[in-house]
Image (cartoon, rainbow, N blue to C red; front, side, top):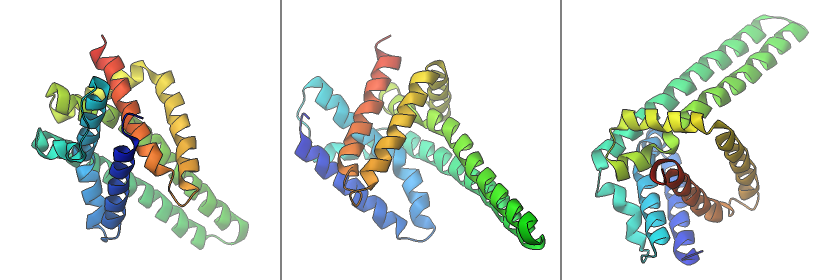
Length: 211
């Protein structure tokens, strides 16, 4: 609410950039994972300046490309590798269930196909949760605390586990908000992205700074 016009413009830039990356086959999504912590650092700087009463500027979004760039990109590599590992496990499970379902006749084959697909979806969700915990505070810890990437991931995971109930409730709220943000042709993300940035920064302040 400090500068809604600038925040909406920032969200619009990120959405357009993300969609442009997704349009590039294979390399685009990988680059999006790689740059995610760098972009997150810029958003956190904007939140920090807003919280401190400083004047926000659009170029603040690029703060991660000026400070702590190498460790942030290293964090992006960790994130990218983890996501690729999750996708590989899910793909192998899904493809195995499809192959098994096609080899079995009638309802048995259909059951194997559906059961394997649901298991792959469930496994993907289960694996993404600890990864999200490890990445939640990591960009802030790398940028503001000069913490090494892997150490930052470990500290983030431990902090989330110590606050597991609030984290899970927040995750549920975010899931619901994401659903509704996507309904009006995705326009809700213009508000959701700034809100999410502020949420990450506020939780970082509560967990790592206030104490």
